[in-house]
Image 1: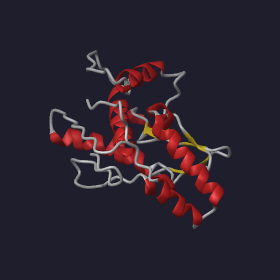
Image 2 (image 1 turned 90 degrees about the vertical axis):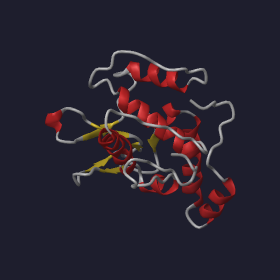
Image 3 (image 1 turned 120 degrees about the horizontal axis):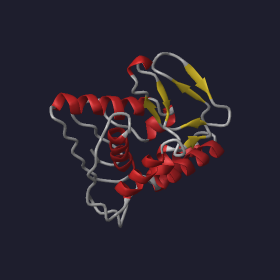
Image 4 (image 1 turned 60 degrees about the horizontal axis):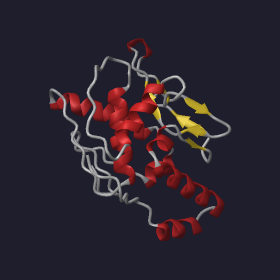
Length: 194
C-alpha cells in the first residue's frame, strides 16, 4: 500500500475559482469547501452530506428528497429480495466495525488484514470504496482488485464502484469523473489514478 505522508489532492484552486466566477459564487465556494472536506479523510466521504443538493435519483426512477442535504454515498442493498434497492451508506452507529476497519486500512502503517469474511459485513464494499476514495483524491494511485475470476472482479467494480458513482450528485460526478470502460479497470482522469 502506498505511503500517505505526502498526500496530493486533485484540486487546482485557480481552476475552481475560474469556474466559480461563471456560476453562483456562494454555491461554488460551498461546493469547493465540500470537496476539500471530503478529500481530507474517507470517513468524510462515505458518511458525508451534500447540503447543496436535495434529491437522489435512483436507478429505478424513484426520486428521494432530503430537504437539509442528501447523503453523499449510497450502496446497494445486498439482500436478494430487495431487487437491487439502494440505501445511504450505513450509519457508523449501526455498523461500528466499518469505522474500525476503515481506520485500520487508512492508517499509514497498515500492512494487511486477515479475518473471517462472511456475507453482509460490507468488507468488500468498504475496501473497494476506500480504493475509490484514494483514487478520486490522490494522484497516481494504482490498486489491483483480484478475485477468483476476472468476471467476478468486473462485476464487483460495476456494482460497488461504478453504480455508486452514478448515484453521486451530478456536480460531483463532473468534478470527480471515472471511466465506464474498459470494464476490468476504473480510471480517474483528474488524478491519473486507477
